[in-house]
Length: 149
Image 1 (tube, rainbow, N blue to C red):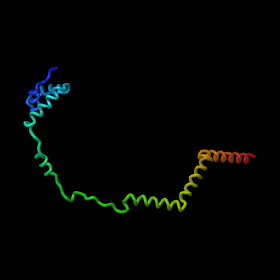
Image 2: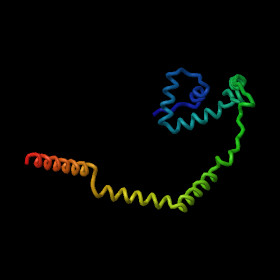
Image 3: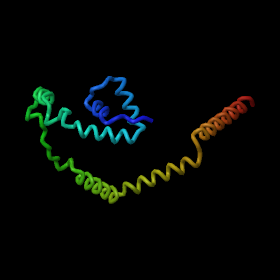
C-alpha cells in the first residue's frame, strides 16, 4: 500500500484538488492509520490558512431580527388554585372513602354481589325459559285431555 505525502494532505485540507482525487484520498483514510496521522498533522499545519468561524454569523442575526417577539407573548408561570393541587385530591379521596365506610355502603355492595353470584349459580336464563316452556306445554296437554273427556 502506498502512502500519501504530507504536502498532498495539506492540499486536501485546503480543498485544492479535484473531486475524484478527493474521493480516492478519503477512501484511503478509512484503511490507513499512518496516513490518518499525516492528515491530522496537515490540518494542524494549515490551520492558520483556513477560514475561522467567530461569533454569530450575519445570517443568524438577520433571522433573529425577522422573528416577531412580543414581551406579552411570554407566559408567566401561573400558580395553581387550591383545588387543582394533588394534595387536595388525595385528601378528598380519603374523606370520601371514610364517609362511605362509615355509612356501610361498601357492606351493602358486598351483599348485592354475593346475592348476584348465588343467583347465577342456581339457574341460568335459558334454563328458566326452558322450564317455563315445559310447564306451559304440560298445562296445554292437561286442558286438551279435559276437553277430550
